[in-house]
Image 1 (cartoon, rainbow, N blue to C red):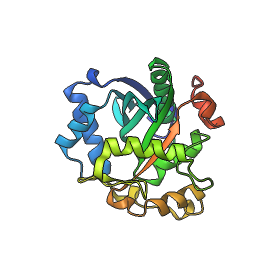
Image 2 (image 1 turned 90 degrees about the vertical axis):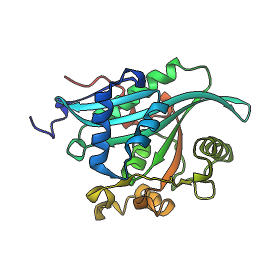
Image 3 (image 1 turned 45 degrees about the vertical axis):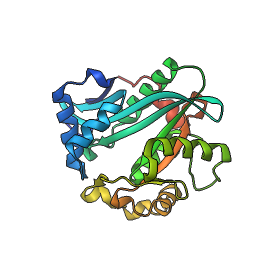
Length: 242
């Protein structure tokens, strides 16, 4: 089986309650292979908080996953649906596959459709530039960004939900979260190829989160809405070609 052939990589999602103990061990093992600082008890506690899980397999092997918490709350007098991304990893040998992106967008659009009326926002923590680059590739409006100042109402929303979730670990001045026991990317994942330094989105991420190698995470926000998808994002919601 060719690991670079995207046709062999498939994503499926389920509720967190559907996971077996073996599923959880498999996910933790994949995370440990790509991050330093993964603690089994902390991983289990973080996962128990989530509501949905996307898993990506190549053949029978788990090569990626992403966890998500969907919840509803009022902020500034308006109803808000929040999708908070937890642990996310994709094995480098499958980066060329669109399975994670396609599966994740399909999952969140399905979840959004089942939530109460109101806007739906994605709360994303970016621990590396590759995660942050997901935003400009697939979403038209997202924050923070290099070419536009964050609107005041978006900043208030970001700060409100980030303070609720992360407490003193969140610094509203920088928009960065520092966890007591952070995950740190391993090896080559903690390096920035020279070819990426000219990318304004990558340069912005590195300037806003200079200690990302130590596990600091930039708090990002975007609205989950069909109209907010870029052309690349819209391609992700089309059925894959056989």
